[in-house]
Length: 281
Ligand SMILES: Cc1cc2nc3c(=O)[nH]c(=O)nc-3n(C[C@H](O)[C@H](O)[C@H](O)COP(=O)(O)OP(=O)(O)OC[C@H]3O[C@@H](n4cnc5c(N)ncnc54)[C@H](O)[C@@H]3O)c2cc1C
Image (cartoon, rainbow, N blue to C red):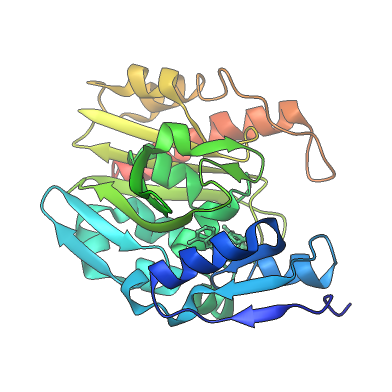
């Protein structure tokens, strides 16, 4: 289908984009890489009168070292997150997860901030961001504010970003030297996961962080597994026992790809695999 007609704005600064959002309110929609927005417009699930394209705002692209954190601009593509040497050194989990997003074409257009703002519970970047304790820097008419990952994902396709606000960058606390693995379970290649597990571990194993994709309306942490793994040795039996706790407190959907109890089974099995691979065992 062809989208309904809209006006197209291409601001060159965040201030200009915020002013356009303020002027057009509910009639406007932000566009980043367009990889989720354009299909939605083509299916006429949304019909904004104005599309505000962030593609011309160069300050929103790139990855920089900021002491104890990496700062990833919202318009940085999945491809650049995957290949960046700082990300590989200090937040390997993100590089591994970005490599699993869709296919090469989409990874070159789709953006880190766009995917997180879209908040698809099956999206591959929410769980790693949550597991790494990301902080979301959001700009609005009154200035910028920072939201912790635990408060950013509100519900299905809903985040803490207000209608008059823009996600500008994401701060990722450094996890230098931590092992990492993103275990994604799909029916066909290059698709959203039925379930996926984002695991990163320090040593073998001093500390573990485990994020769950598509196990509820938002990304989740497998906190019971994380507690069971802290100080445990990375043996196959020990890790698989801790992984049995991975589905605790989850509320996954039932759909054509799998029933909720099947997803919970997958979460337990995949968590074992992901943690063992992250620990290099
Ligand atoms: C065929 C196909 C397969 C895919 N497979 C996967 C997959 O396997 N895993 C996966 O994770 N994703 C997948 N995706 C989605 C892809 O990752 C998109 O890149 C991502 O979901 C959206 O990023 P975007 O930059 O394209 O955002 P857009 O599509 O431009 O925007 C998405 C939404 O976020 C809002 N938004 C964007 N940026 C901002 C911002 N800075 N501030 C405030 N709001 C903002 C927009 O208004 C819109 O509502 C797939 C997409 C396609 C088309």
